Image 1 (cartoon, rainbow, N blue to C red):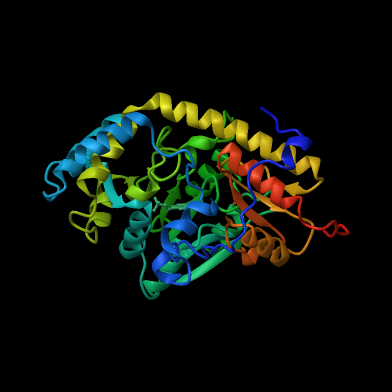
Image 2 (cartoon, rainbow, N blue to C red):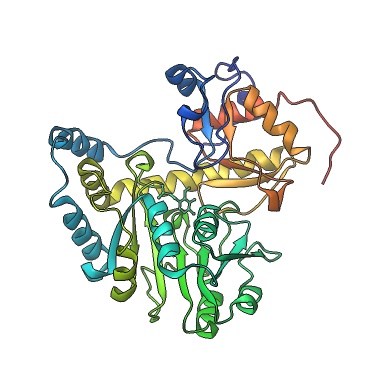
Length: 380
Ligand SMILES: Cc1ncc(COP(=O)(O)O)c(C=O)c1O
């Protein structure tokens, strides 16, 4: 339901105290912000920074998690394999093609460990999700960042030009974080056909479920491409609402899955997390409803952007990049003062802010706070 201009003003209480902005994915910890009282600040903050599902997991999943808690005194035994088998059936692949991780973050780390090292190149877009680049750097690889093209797709021609025999791994995030934009399936296929045979490709589909029907997009899990070098990362942190449970996985050819598994943390997925993820896979109604709600909320966000004559990228995810047409530092400071945390500034797109879609009440508060900013001359 659209939010009227009138409703925008005067809804919900205004946050008074200054909240702590979480600066990076890894800084997402109160242990590192000791000046912030733990519980109270968290409750007051509106977290629009990490592209989570603000509504949480489904009731069915919560029930399974409550029951699983009583088994917490035991190490995981059968849970890892049960979840692997379930995911394999779900995607119609063999269990040897699935590796689980502590979030898909672990999968990204495994890929860097398996395919990179000194003398190897890691090819990524700019901007994109920064974690794989950090893992690549830690592995001693040279990180090559190729700017997105004018339509904010991966510039695959340019990425190809940088991919010589020493390119160990190419990272494609689709939809891309932080832009929310898509790279067309047929362009990716053409790229794969030309890529050196020795270069592995990691396609990160963390935001796959948020893509509405689109003829330019097809998941590489749902519609596999016959190529022994392609692995696809998925996560339970986004649409399933389980970011805190830390479960992700990769679907890969068996040989690649074996290589990835070598550095996997044994028992890295907890009993409760594995059972939660399995239950989440079963609850397809919840996923459909969450995708529909996100599409509506995204449209409403764009309506609010347009009402204020701002600019935003066409997002296919659960976050939107907005050009506030005023200094970004000022906007971030204003939001922070009002207890709203959005993603940290993205150096490669420093005129934009990236906002995760929160609940409807949270987004009303976001726009109410936005409108408290003094009018200002437009800047591009
Ligand atoms: C594109 C992308 N991939 C992977 C991740 C890692 O998520 P997780 O480790 O929770 O699965 C994120 C987190 O925001 C992300 O945006």
